Length: 376
Image (cartoon, rainbow, N blue to C red):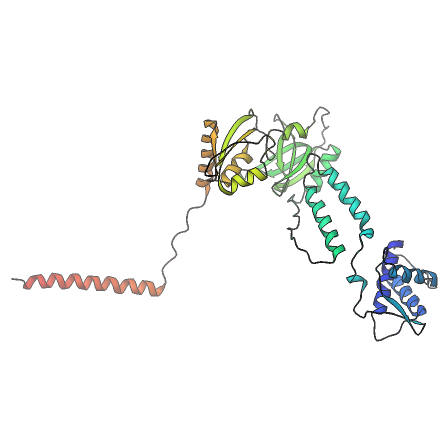
């Protein structure tokens, strides 16, 4: 057990003794309790004659009393022999952490904040906010006033670590995975880069027999093996160039388009506050709140899916060919949706009610037929 862990264990043990109102603990009693705690919780072998020193426990008591570096614990001595808390409800577990004890955590937050400005590291901003929020709540001792959803671990599948290792060490993989059409594909894959998008891990690299960078969703991998092939030295990947003109992870072999979209309602407000792409510019705003935006990017599946998800609050104005492709994309998605469920079978009471109704209608018809025979 490390020195820091030992000290924390002693503090917790002393705290438990001082909160015990049924017993009186002298310095020797505290030493014995700390010795037992260290022996019982030590992972390594401890000598039978081991004992926490008197000086160590005295320094622990002094540190726990300290207002700046410790817990500001109200430790008092009764009858010049026994140690107690003057406040019976006090515990170091309920003590507010002082700002000075959070200096290492503050330095971590500052370091993460510097890295969050780098490409591909934007998700660190949320971690920085969470750390600083926890620090403020702990120092003030107040209840949390802002609640954030817990950071969800992106889905990576059973072979995520294998793929990460292959990327770091440039190892060639023989993969079997399920593609976007639910077909099983087997490829020789040269992984170069990994990223997350919409809660999933993706690996980018080259596939044997195909040109250009290919994308594999890691949680769709069903099996793998290491291919005994050299990793070509000319296989390189520049993320800044690859992601510059797209949203998401796929980059089709198509030119960049100058796109004009109009948006209204909540989508317009969202685009103003959170631009979809670095090229986005607000070019017009109508009296009814409809906004016009310009985007310069390569339209990929992720772009068309974004349009579909925000339909009908967004419309592609130009170019017309792109608007037609977007409409086709939406129609294809709608066509793949399951048909409405068939009507549920009628209950027994409903069937009996329909039978009685039909009989009544038939009787009325029969009466009309016979009555006509007696008409003059």
